[in-house]
Image 1 (cartoon, rainbow, N blue to C red):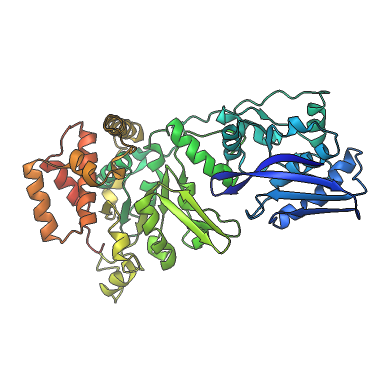
Image 2: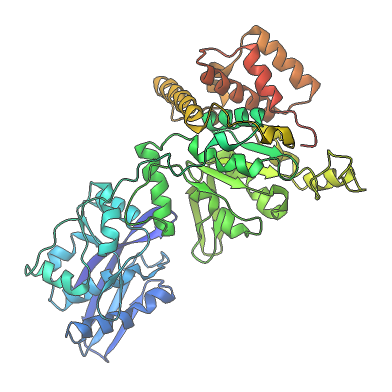
Length: 505
């Protein structure tokens, strides 16, 4: 007889169904696993042997064959331990087969039979709900998986608890969702701490309101990193849909803490020595990279020209499309990555290109060489390119600004709400101005006659590309939303254009 259990194999954030078939047949005693298992799956037999021994359950003196179907789908990870053990116990008639076939299981077994937490409980619960099954997972994953709501989640602490549950000896109550981590402003750095840089603060507000990509160029100590560090305090909390999609990626990466889903927009800041796989995703199992972990949030890249050229160039496609395809020899995985790119750069290697008293003897060629590491096509994808001048010593003695992050965040939230309502009324999936294009952009962001004339003159004078032309329109639309205006006027276009023209960038 063949017993079945069900689990999932992860293909990016998609949990693909896998049937675990276990057959016990006459022959030389052995335990074989087939169906493209990786090393971690093949080693499951040793963990299962030890776990069953801890329960005083002897392995049969027959040939045990486990097939993971579909057999041409690669199986990776230790979460196959529990479903294989369930199928084996059902084949031994220790557990009822009809009950085991009604669950999707995942979990790693320790040698004493305890269930160890694994990544991906949230997308696994979604897959179980789609199949009309319950989810069986380790206790540490139960609160996370229960957020799906559509699938009942059973989260035992050990294999012994699984046996007692399905034999009716000690039923386990379904898990409840973990604590919803609401966005709090107490842990954020306040924009009021930044002295001077009023133009940079305004640009940061516009970028946050429309999810526009921002590049800041300025000498060391001008406050570029300080400004970026205050961006999380300006962003509105994630919607329920955004929080779930972001948490699904973090679940795959094992970053969810205590099963809680956060409403706070992610803020990722990789070091400039990060590899391509770390930034865009990849590795042995094609895991999500920083661009995907920043989905619905911010990716801050300090010392932007110091990143390897290959890493920078790979950003061009995800910045434009909001999706990254991680292609490896044995995997082709798509991850969502609709993020806001914020980059900071010095104007040259020493950083003092604009100060004749401090600049090196190679100025201005050193600046051209340094910023030349950022290609034209990538530079063109920044909606806002901002020059951040050094802060005057006299500004440091000024009292704190009257307006801090709370006031700016309120305006950003109002502008975001206007955008959501506008695009919901139009029946489109866009949520911010950065998402619109084509006819929709012309419909909602076309300026009045005076603004259109200014835009045309600027495009001709500064040779704006079609992409740059449309990005100016998007930024102008966001400025109008911040001002509470229904239409885009000449003043909005003028401010948007001023964020596009930066010396050396």
